[in-house]
Length: 174
Image 1 (cartoon, rainbow, N blue to C red):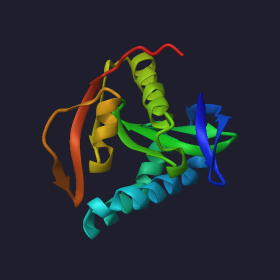
Image 2: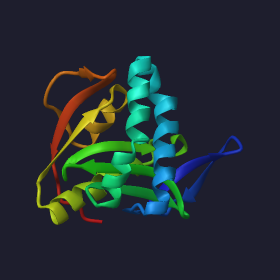
Image 3: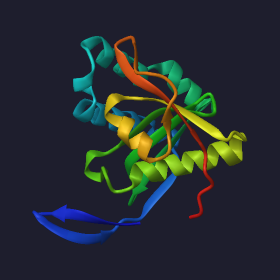
Image 4: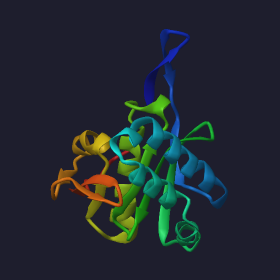
């Protein structure tokens, strides 16, 4: 994947070699820190204090981490030169629970790559042809661009605003 980066105010072409793979145990904290940083930058303004606390409680929940260790909560990362620049997680085999990309890598195709990787995983490893997500207000447009459609109107639970969405998984050729 190639992308245009801005360096010292100048546009340069720099090839990006993005690797998407399952996240290892010792990378869990990095993934949750990336989720928190990105949430605070782009999403927190759409939430009440209750919603922000609910999100923080979710990503710091020890039960969630134990589910990850036991293989019940899948977590995948996008890496450039061994640095995690994006992450996506699945619960219940087909539901995208978290998707965050470091702000420096927004609009460079990293989120799309994560969706495609997880779609292939859900189709080939789990045997399902659909994925769901509860999209944050900030992310609704992105999910529409990658093939998701609304299944209901926006809802709010525990201060978290989201639009339920679904997509039929397409086979991707790399």
